[in-house]
Length: 132
Image 1 (cartoon, rainbow, N blue to C red):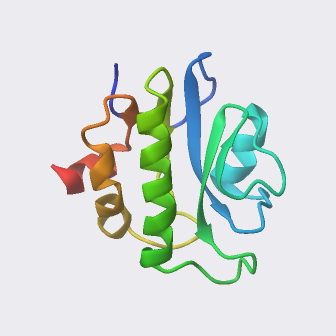
Image 2 (cartoon, rainbow, N blue to C red):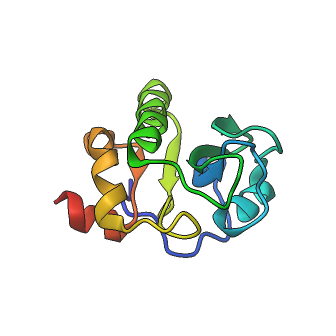
C-alpha cells in the first residue's frame, strides 16, 4: 500500500478516502474541500467521514481566520482514531492547512505523528519530509 498521497487526485478506488481541510461550518467552497464534494463531502459536515471523504477543520466558520495549531491537532487526533478503527480503508491525506489556512508543512506535519504507524494512511511527500 502506497503511503504517499498523490499530488493531484482525480479518482478514488472503492476503499480510498480523500482527507481534506475544511472549515467548522462545513462549507466546502474552495480548494481541496470543493474537490471533496465530488466524492460525497456534504455541506454542514465539518469534521469526520462523509461519503469517501474525511474532513479535518483548519479554519473556523468565519473563513477569514484560521484555527490554531492546537485546535487543528484535536481534529487530527480524531482522524487518527478513525483511521485506526477502519483498517480496511486507505486514507489519502492532502496538504491540509497548507493552502487557504496558510500554514506550512513544517507546522502541520508534526500533528500527524500518530499516523506514521498507521499503514492505511498516506501522507503528502512534504509531510513525510518533516516526519522522517
